[in-house]
Image (cartoon, rainbow, N blue to C red):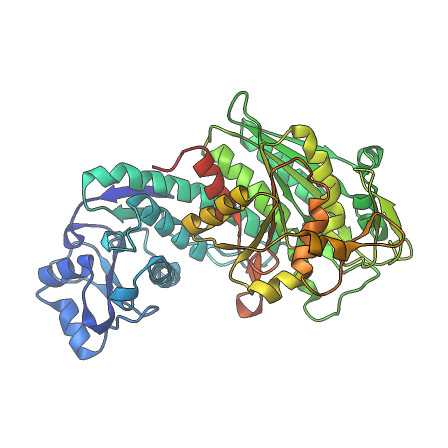
Length: 497
């Protein structure tokens, strides 16, 4: 995709299509006012006739508008002007993207970026524009015998008020392009079926990504090496399957002498629950249980693509969790890489069992900060629904920076507490602690379990069980929290103008 900025008035911009907006009660946006004036009131006439609406989600494609150079004018509703913010801005662009996906338009120019969007900067307006359009043009067609034709859109233009905003807008578009590509990678990996996206497939993907980006290195450890490291908690999860487990390590080195940001992603490529078998309905969605792994792999690719001046290390423990005669049983006790023993009361609480050894392994990189990302608990979905990622940390400073990054990226999180009273719920009569602490506060006790392996490190846990994928007719991976994590890296690299 190509990107450009323009200071031209909407009516004077030639090309395939311009996007303009109208608010509730017929108030015209900046681009719409110009088009209306140049076309002798064409927009106003359509409003009076009831053919146009300012409601968010409404649209009308106009062709060959008199006085307008563009071949098409896509008019979208913006809602109430008093409530017009980032959410409404992005919804209007989602509407535009859905309409454009079905057209043969090769280039568009977005004039919604001239509107006042909660004081949002030109950088973010351009970034939201490109990211939103790209994400809604995304389609997973890899497994279909007759995939539909890809979109013909090749160029996206961003309208700016003055030339001084052009450089910031272009930076936003460039960052969004890397973000959108990263999210597409994460979504592709998540959407692939478990008979394709195995631990070995994830490992090969990581190796391929390293070949594509010069400053990215990948190392893959097999089960023999994992066993030599003493990762018996990790290996206990893979006892019931013939698919070999892998430990993937990816390193991006964009700076000298800096401690890395370490991202650890849960990579359960299919989770049947093990002996603690999950119910059948909806079990197909357990292919998404590796979305934590997909998101951290995608994030390091974003950093490499943008050549950010910092160091990032990704650690992905990946395996399947299936029942069989050799599977781990409830009540079994294993020793983690840290030396601590764990009583496994529920084999369906497996994500923490692979992450704890990965967190211990990741300590060797002497991280500046360490963040694990996992579709970890159904309890998180009960607490926050499918809207926000749970953020739990042993550092208020780190938690605040992650939540702030989520606001900036419009990929929001919400902090949950961690405290000793929750940690006590993991008590075991037979081992150092158990892998579950009961139903109450399940997302928090899961984080407390992981916290036992992060002493002395500034660490945070992101539970993405509610945000990593959608169910129903729109079923599919979302690519979250790649925007949140990428925003955190962009801010640490001082790369946002």
